[in-house]
Length: 361
Ligand code: NAD
Image (cartoon, rainbow, N blue to C red; front, top):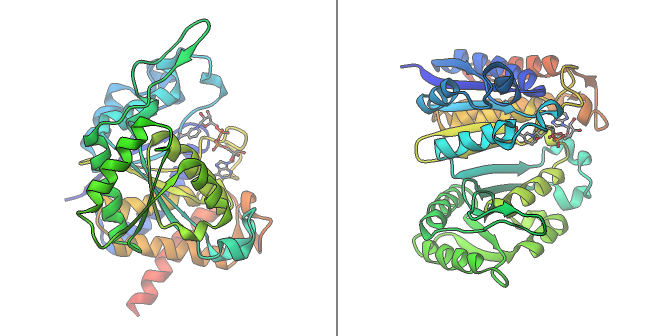
């Protein structure tokens, strides 16, 4: 039976980069004999323009029925002054909540070919391979009460034991499949919610004796990520701290246009690049599609259970970078061929086709 994929391109460069991810997916499906059925839905500013709602009912239904959601990005200045519930971002937050995707997985790895693209020294970042596991649908972004009055404003950071347990289990299981090292990041020296976080993580750790658990306060972790990023493998943290640390980690690796993410729950998943809709370059054909293509690779591995196909995509990306193909954002480093968004997608698709052929020979 065909795997059902809900495709949401969104706004700005979302459209351009998802088109390239789909181009590569088509080649992957052909070479690895995977049957996929992609249905397209609207979300974000474009959905508001067409339906008066950033997450129309039929898009939510489509996402709920699909095996996985392949998503680009949403947002733009045009919709910034709408009432909060009509803004593109509220559509995305609702989609995550409705699908129950509580774990956001953000790999931050350095491509050897792009070591020079980082603001950090090559000797500090060569070989960095971090997986940040961020709790995504609770914590201070969702906590009640929240409000803004004339002379004060407030939000609530709250986690239940059950919410901490489920994200901790996810992170420990991932650590088991990697280097068996997990660092939990909190602010337990100040926040009660972090005290509970630490207690629960330590309790869950007893079920994973093979994994070495450490803890860091978030202020120290943000410093250590810059000072010595190779000390980290899996990093487990809450919604707010994870939001900030994962953007910081992305900069270790060079361009924001390179990094994928997966948001997974019990029965649904969303795959999306970590960047936004980049209105400053939208429609110019210069966006880097690699983050979207690698997000599609995460979908192949996690939701479709095709690790081999996912690896073929990752290898194709590496080989194209090795050959010196660069989009504008990474063109300062080892560029032998400056590529448009489409050309980069073409090269990666061709490399996937070639890599599989050479394995067959
Ligand atoms: P952004 O990530 O869109 O862009 C930041 C910078 O990185 C820009 O200079 C942009 O040109 C560049 N950039 C981003 N992706 C790139 C790519 N693939 N290739 C080359 N360069 C790339 O962040 P922003 O400018 O702060 O936000 C723009 C809009 O995106 C806002 O409306 C924001 O709300 C929205 N946003 C959406 C998401 C999402 O959909 N998940 C995430 C973040 C921001």
